[in-house]
Image (cartoon, rainbow, N blue to C red):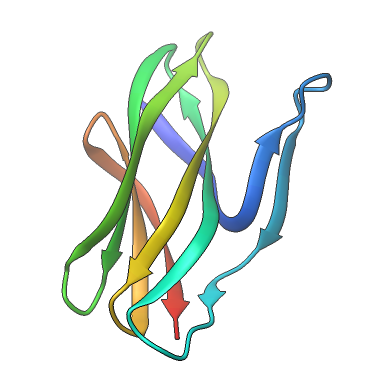
Length: 123
């Protein structure tokens, strides 16, 4: 069983080579825009999961809450090396077009099962 420990939307995130520390820069919940469609050049969504050892397909899906339209998705792998260990996933979104102002959500899926989400505003 997999548990979502945290999720953050931020300007940038990376793992330091030497220390293996997670670096999260500029956590936010609002994207400012005056004209639509609005294109945001780059942001990251960082998740931490914990659970059974194994390799898991992780998908981050951005959805417009008003229309239900999928805006973008990032797909990758999360590997938990030993039972009850933790894994970090960084999904980078580039040049994402938001068609209108409003509320959006990032759904977090493991092996196509939703384990959590995070909301943010555009406009």
